[in-house]
Image (cartoon, rainbow, N blue to C red; front, side, top):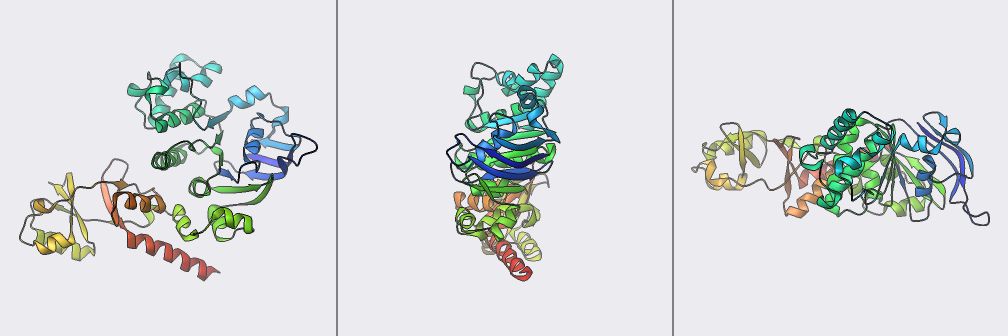
Length: 374
């Protein structure tokens, strides 16, 4: 889909190249993360794809076409572009911001309106609520989602993302990363994503291109780079705790245990039997098998076998989804001060639980697999 062949970019003939003899092939539907320290050439590389920066020599192909032969404006209209801070126009409504490129392409008004609503819904922004608001009325995370919606408006096959989530606080950033990965599963775009954050690269990328001083140091999957860094520079970039970073490659759906349900009118002794049968220390409580009321713990039902379950219910404070990474699940456990967290599907129905022991086992099993394969 995107191919660099011996690409060089020099801003000044006397200085070293900003990008030095780059060969890189990004396949259709992949998220390729460009990562490295400031000045390594990652942003220059990305901007050469849509000709915001012109290469000095070499060839760049997008969908088989040499971009040198393409009109820059027409090229850019076929490539979505998302930047840090979104770049939304403050005097325009959210709907007008999203509709910008389709308007430039001369789409029919009804088609544009339908597309705007479709994209806002995809980003979990109710069109009825958000279409006529201004950017100032939205949170940082909501504005960033609108920026992504605008980049997708003309259904471009390629998207360029320049540190799009860098200005967000860690909690919002994690949530919008999850949202974006959910959307990518549905749309399957080819994405070039610039970041300075190796953890973000590991979590988001199908492939990671590590750059230094304009050169490509290593290109591979997150697992390949974590398990076999090319040199000391890549090792230092990854940093310590590689086992913890591996948790960004694993999802809750691969680890969590399903929990049984019990009616709130049942005796605690019945809850205890279910816990022992399913080998769990928590059980979900419902009303008539429908409404979820909370959960009860082993230590509580063990001490109060004659009480009704309804007297021992605890609220479910926080949940993760099956697609949440194990690292994000661990972070949420720390934030709520618990050694376990519940897992719920998209519609909010709680399905199971992940404990700290589950996370430790997942990491240790992964280490054992690596040692065996080595």
